[in-house]
Picture 1 (spheres, rainbow, N blue to C red):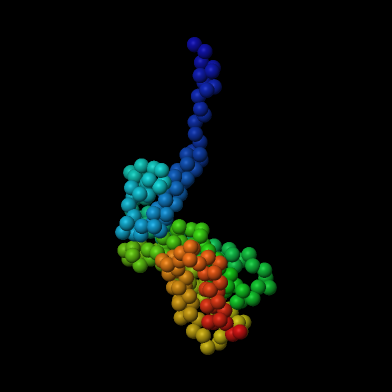
Picture 2: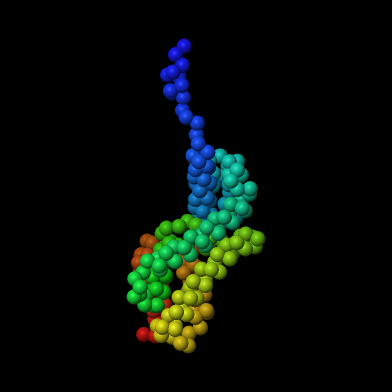
Length: 214
């Protein structure tokens, strides 16, 4: 028997790194699918069978990566809060050094809304389900949300110190009102009735004319 050809045709053993990479890709695919389902159906309506169908895996396979539906949901919620914070931070970091404090505020509004509505199912899922998941699933995402809220506080304080936001403005109250309004957009915005550009411009106008000195 000519075993040379048989040996040559036999595939090389997969390396541990390739196996790990495939596992990581599957885990990420499940997370992405969970974010999509959670953003559409909400916490009460999210079923692992739906997540598995979107991810292209068998439902029992999910338990290899996540011990329960709630563990998966918590991860999506944390990712949503984490990703929007990183996106806004990176967008701000890319601005020219001579950008004004008000410029930075308006760019942050733009980055938040576009990421929430156009880019990330994670952000939509996190925002839409914040008040619907059990309290124990809110702890880790809430810590990330606190960091994001602090980012906005710093933006408003910097603008106030620069004289670009009114000195009499309660920046904490205004910041919370603004974030609440922008987060609620996921519940009512319809791109068929108003464009995202129009929505962003309106939100920026709220900041410029509601908080600004000019």
